[in-house]
Length: 317
Ligand code: HEC
Ligand code: HEC
Image (cartoon, rainbow, N blue to C red):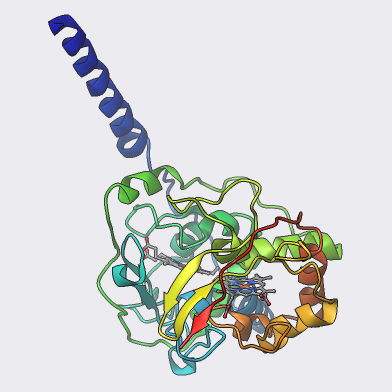
């Protein structure tokens, strides 16, 4: 009996040691911030603005939005100046999406371009910590150097706003441990996005992080395999409780029965087929996409395999 207990104790100690090694010694995988310099041309800034405001949505997540109006509409005077994602809203801790304007104290004014690039694509904070993956760095790992540096060029061109949205990020255990294993250096240059509409649309869907809200998640908030974009996540916001729609091509529970024009209306006006305004869905940013990019998203949505999944109706107060 004693031997068995010692055996179990030994195994437990080994298991704990393995966890410590995996999550604390070997993680996060951090490399020095690369020595890069963002361009300063008007052309690069314009390209970065399109990407940051409408494609990668940097300035949707990193800005205060008015939750009472539909569309995740950014408070324009504070564009890019940071936002808190508090524990009360269901996050595993208090998460601060930093002020991305060039203010030296509260923003990224004193960061190097390489530090911003590393945070964006590799998920590493300035101090070497692993970022909470609500920051979609795993998606941004697919941004080319040119696109990523254009985004930084645009951020550098924003008016510096002195604004600290709240205290530094504090993630609860054990989530704080698990997230340490996710960051990966981006060493080979990511390829440019495909040029054909469906390929570009799939790239846009990844950059827009549609799946972060529309994927069906398990109880640990991990996407369930085979349920990409099948909806059902619940969000409690100031305006009520909303559920992310099933946007697979299923005809009865997804958007398979929507016409292209109806889908374009979602992206342009933020209303369902029946004309109901959509909350949380960031259409205010999406409507700024070019017509070609919107049509590419629609074409790509048509290729998402149908998943039959009925989502509860959103309840707006
Ligand atoms: C879906 C929401 C979301 C999007 C989109 C997003 N971010 Fe973030 N970002 C966050 C959150 C939340 C954090 C805080 C993570 C943490 O502190 O662990 C963060 C952290 C960061 C950090 C690190 C700040 C620090 O405290 O060290 C940088 C830099 C950053 N984001 C830049 C960007 C850029 C550039 C883009 C667009 C390419 C972008 N983000 C898009 C949510 C987002
Ligand atoms: C921040 C979370 C979030 C992101 C990111 C997001 N959505 Fe949504 N979306 C929602 C929510 C929530 C709803 C339902 C809102 C409601 O019921 O008021 C919705 C509704 C929709 C609808 C309407 C379907 C219907 O029921 O009529 C479509 C289409 C859609 N989203 C497509 C997309 C696409 C495509 C992307 C990426 C380009 C995207 N969404 C990104 C949260 C999000």
